Length: 165
Image 1 (tube, rainbow, N blue to C red):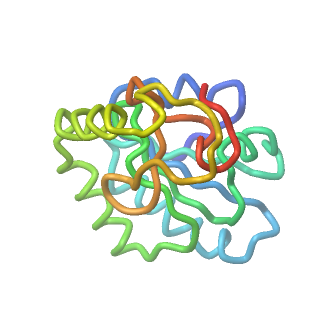
Image 2 (tube, rainbow, N blue to C red; image 1 turned 60 degrees about the vertical axis):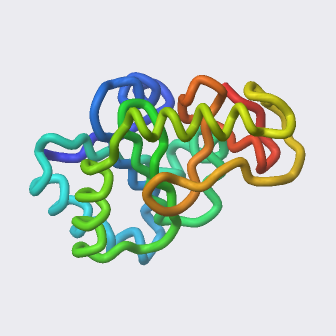
């Protein structure tokens, strides 16, 4: 499957689809991004049941800013509208395959329960939606993932100066 160009106009619709969405945040001038591009494209062919999207941070600076992208390439993975992985840096092909295996193996009911438990235990309440200078949780595979009180991926990380949806 070919990759899908993600923009401010189609991003939300892609995230809201059921299943797995992998996103490569990149820029044309970025050397590591150019190195990662064929690895990513090959993975999109190996996993036809997964949507592979690309966000050009130069063409979509508002979208990149909303997600707090500070380093590229950055890889994010959503599964059933929940951000389960986010990490900057180049990922080798074998590690991308391992990541896909882990994401596919996730028990999403368990993930939703973990999110609900974390939100309920949060010192500022389950639907906290303001910046108070700390991270809320770690991703369910690796990296950081941040969610709102309903378990949906946030556009801005509460702990990094942004509000929720």
